[in-house]
Each structure stands twice: as C-alpha cells, then as structure tokens.
Amino acid sequence: MSSGPIWHPITARDNPQLQRLRKLAQDATAYRKMGGVWLEGDHLARAALQRGLRPALALITDAAAQQEALRALADQAGKVLVVSPALFNTVSGLESPAQIAFDLPLPTSLRIDPHADSVVLDRLQDAGNVGTILRSAAALGFRQVLALKGTAALWSPKVLRAGMGAHFGLRLIEGLSVGDLEALQVPMLATSSHTDAWLHEVALPSPCAWVMGHEGQGVDPALMARCALRIGIPQPGGEESLNVASAASICLYESARRRLT
Image (cartoon, rainbow, N blue to C red; front, side, top):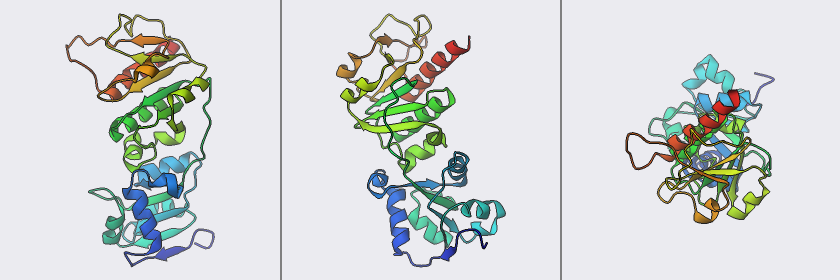
C-alpha cells in the first residue's frame, strides 16, 4: 500500500467530494463544467485503464474493497474513497449501482482530423443510440465521431454505459455547427429514403464520413445538401424506417466490408 494511493473512508452523505461525484453521475452535462467524467462499474474502469488513462479518484464500497480484483482496480486511481453500499447508492444514477467507479479527467478537446473516416451525429437525442453508434464506429474502424449541437452529451453516464468502453478508442468532438464540418476533406454520405442509390449497389468512397440524423427529423436539410451521396438501405420487410443506430451499424459495416474485399 505504501506506493499506492491513500484510502479515505467517507461516512457523511454531504461530503464535498461525494457531492461532486453525485453531480457527475446524475447530471448528463456536468462533465463540461467540472472537467471530470463518471465511469461506473469495473468494465468501463478497465477499458479506460487499458487505453492508458489514469483516474483522478476511485469510489469503492467497503464490501468491494475486500475483493482483490476490485481493490487492485481502485489502486490505479490517484485517490480512493471508501463508502458503504448505501452511501454509494446515493451517488450512483443507476437502479442497480455498481461497487466501484472512477472520476476520470475529461479528455482534452481535439480538432477535426480532416482526412479521418468519420461519423457525424446530427442532433441525435437518445443516449442509447449515441452510445451504440460509438461502439459500432470503434469496432468498424471509424475512429472520429463529430457531434453537432443538440446531440446527446457524448461523455454523459448513459452514453458511456451504452458505448461499453468505445469512447477511449475514438476521437470525439462535440458541440459543432454544420459550418464546422467544412474542415472535413472526405466526402459525406447520408442515408435517405428519397434516393435510388442503394447501399449494396453504389460505390462507396474511402475514407468517408457517414452522417446520421435526428431520430424523428432525419438529417438537417442544410447538412444533407452538403453530402456527396444520399444512400438508401433496402428494407424488403416493408418497415417504414430503421432505428438510427441500426442504420449506422449497417452502413459502417458495409464500408468496412468493402475495404476487406
């Protein structure tokens, strides 16, 4: 223990450090002002460590601290707070809270890489959809995700949980305007039901940027006008439209598949 962080037992609900963590865990956009990201659960904690990120602080229950693996995980933080399960539950935003969490410094803001394979998120509202798209992007080699203003907060606890660690392998930039996308020097592609260019038939440029639009309104017309291609996904089953996260996975997979053939 001499070379690791000092462990601090906390018993008061109104402890200032717990108040900070409570805000990070329960307010989707608190990270923007507070400069920290709430990672709850050992899976997200390990994913961050595997990418070389070091948490400023770990919060762990006294019960979890008796487990060697979780104790070793907490020791990777600069500081460790130990609380009862009941007190941990007052911080967590989950119905079934985990036993360990990290307060990770918010990754540094990045500039758009003009030549990177990218995904553009246009005002997506659902945190689950956003996290799922991040996970697909990371798996299929699209390392840059550009979120326009109005998109669910990329580092919010809900998006982080849905992303399952994908965040730490991606270049994430949020709060952008349509005009900011002029920095991209790869063609933008969008899905649309008003086109005769089908995904399985059209030539796909590589690298490229796939644009995924609002769940109800689709891609903003001004952004759609900037896209080099409008591409349809065949739906022989006859449904009106696909969930945006499903559509993104199909499009990103098709781009990745073409590169392998």
